[in-house]
Image (tube, rainbow, N blue to C red; front, side, top):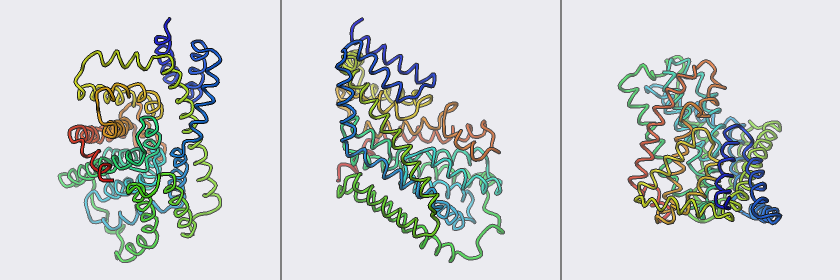
Length: 436
């Protein structure tokens, strides 16, 4: 068996093991070391050491724990809950106000954390009881919560974009800038869909009952101004200095993390236990992501050393497909793989394999990465494996899984519309990075 075929066989074994349920990081490492030892001998262990050191020295990846800690601090402090309640009370007389509150809160929370599970869970805890009490449509409610929660995978500072940057050789700051307009576009599509449907059929999202509305808006506005706006300003200013090119994601993340910590502690809602839980959650998720990055780098190095990546790229480019059709095929592959897999193996394994094809077709890498990110976000809402449904079911057990799925599908269609718009209008992704 040639080295190229051996590498492809290793890729098949890897995906089979992941589908069965073996831990991704250890599977990556084991398959890489085993295949590398067969083909390259003991030199594969030297390769493993070099790849590990290269990940440890990558300062961009150091931004991951900072942004994760920001998100977990906001989750533990209850500030996002205050934001949701404030928006809900401000718009209480409007049909579909809870949908609007969920999606606005989700968009802001997405700018603080890139973890979908955390966002969907928090939104479900905050909004689920209110939606049930207000007789909101279960399908629309579940769709709004799960779709809003997935915005964290796309809107900066997205952990996925931080990881994707070194994989494709594009600065994370450019990917952050490219994701802003598509992220806001998707949020706007979700909001418009819910409001139009509630306007056509008010029973889907009736106005809040008078007894649950605030007697005056002054206390609501004061609570938002004092308790929530300072943190929102910190988040926006952190992203602002990144997008303006003033600071790297790591530097801005560190400053934003410290400012968020001081504000949440100063709000009086943080306890030692909550800070400890936020710190341990950050340590756990950061360690998992960085271990995955290290293992995938090793697998990618072995796969490339065997010549399998070039072999696969030459085989696909020999089909002589037009660049746009090739791009659509790759996005379709990413979309289908997103059903059973999380974004981590797709970004770290699949993207490096198809990257030579994208480069040979002279497709703009920033545009390509943005399309992949939006497509992966869509995959979070694709039944029957969509993890967002299980996160929501865990915190709102009253809702039937079939209703949650039905609600997710309509928002998945909206996200496919978003993918199509970014595909047809590349400037949605490339304009903002070009003005930096």
